[in-house]
Structure formats: structure tokens, C-alpha cells
Amino acid sequence: MSDSSQSKTAKATSDGFTKQAPPGNERRDDARFNRDIDVAVRELSAVSKTPDLRKPVIHGKIQNLSRRGVCISSKVPLTSAAVVRCDIRVADLPVSVPTLMQVRWVEKTRGQSYVSGLLYMF
Image (cartoon, rainbow, N blue to C red; front, side):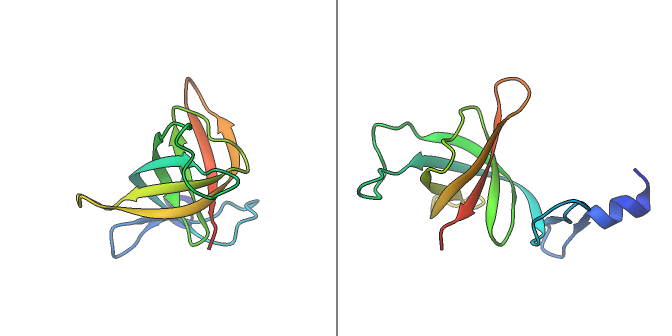
């Protein structure tokens, strides 16, 4: 990839994030920001919208995030269309940010990994 084409797809911002511009055939309008952030995901119960304690917590990494959602990599597949609670770690702080999201798509990658697209619910 030439330097000029690379500068059109990824740019560092003043706060240290790397901004990923959508490729030419990309349907999403929002830029994504590459980041490696720990996340814990738990599927919610369809009836009460509380964490389903029978479902395991799935630990993964946010690969990139945008104004509308995140892309998560994990060793365990998420359930497509499920409503989930994501606890997103904040730097080195002992707290995480709980976020309600919906799994929009799941793809198996090489080996035993999965990549999932999640949409913020509000």
C-alpha cells in the first residue's frame, strides 16, 4: 500500500486513537477508531432484560469502535441478534462502563476466534 493510500484509510488523532476511514465499498458512514480494549459480554434474558446468569461471561477485545457500535474479537461466538450487556474496561481504572448492545453479525475467523459487530441500543 502506498503512503498516500494509507493516509486515506488510517489517521492518528490528537488523543492517540487511530481513525479508520471506511473503504470505498463500505456502507457505514461513521469512522471507526482502532483500539484494544478489554470487554466482558453477557447475553440478557429475553423476558427481564437482566443478565442471564446461566449464560457464561464472554471475554473479548474491542478491535474498533465508532459512534454507533463496536467490533469485538472473542474465542467464543456471540449469538446473532442477542441483546447483551457489555462491561467495557476503562484504561487502568478498577471500574468498567456497562453498555446495552445488540449483536448484529458474527463471523468465524482463522483458528478458534470470532469477530462480532455490536450496535449501541441507545
